[in-house]
Image (cartoon, rainbow, N blue to C red; front, side, top):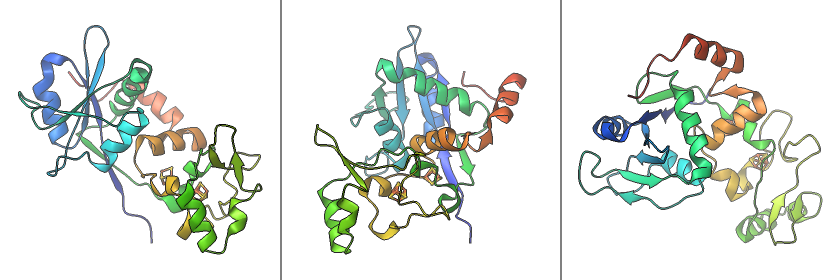
Length: 229
Ligand code: SF4
Ligand code: SF4
């Protein structure tokens, strides 16, 4: 049985004077980048009824190494989350917007099937914490905390040791995790359709959001179908 498709927000770039349009895009399920004349970037994300970020919104924020957002109180974006992007992450956000000019609408449905992908199990920086190590022990897999599988850095970081070809040693030949039931928290937190997922697929499989690179470049040559104003 194949995995159900994943619906992810489409990024659009807007000028500050188009805030109403940006807010409408976000309310319809997309993500918006508000870029001013000095190329400062703020992002606008949707919130749940409980006032929390959606799962993919939180993932996007974590990719930008931020956790906090400001809930807009007044104006067209009232009730949405606003975050100022740090300068070093601006190019990433603008790249997401450029990538998504290929797609119409505020969201995009992608046929992502983790059981045939495993891109995020290559070159992964999987940090292990005390809970992970306890889970290994409780499952009778003390070996997973040993040198063969684990790297301990001088700064105290404990991470999974990768094979020479960059893949996680715990990935089976069928592209499935051999310790799925007791996999580390970092692996559990990895969300299909998040920017981290798309980035892993790009780096490992050469797929930029499901399309092959030459397909993408061809599409860029043709010009975008839609653009944020
Ligand atoms: S990269 Fe994304 S689609 Fe592939 S296995 Fe990881 S979460 Fe699933
Ligand atoms: S532990 Fe499993 S899910 Fe995590 S990176 Fe390794 S193979 Fe992938």
